[in-house]
Length: 137
Image 1 (tube, rainbow, N blue to C red):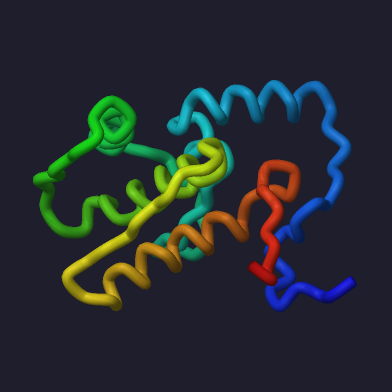
Image 2 (cartoon, helix red, strand yellow; image 1 turned 120 degrees about the vertical axis):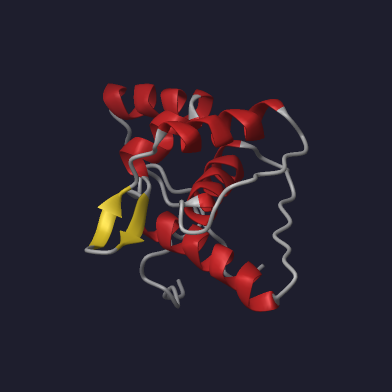
């Protein structure tokens, strides 16, 4: 049994004992990304780690992501577009098996920033919600 390089990653095939509330919450999270984000996704805020509470326009962004395959977001700087998108990407990755997610940007540093936000949010999830990761693949 090898030790994870990152202790905040959940190893693949780890068994979790679920209670009824966890099962109900998983089902709700699967069907409602806004619920998932506001109850389980943490972001790095101005004052450190904070549970992500969405503004109405961010909730609308998520609804648009869910209902339309192509989206253009016209918004000013510093309104949480990247955090909102990263949180949605995390939800999508967890609850949609066999999907491919592409994160692209005009600069590789921007794409890496988004990936970093997704990874941070994943690491902060409770273990019973995290899918396991096989670090050998």
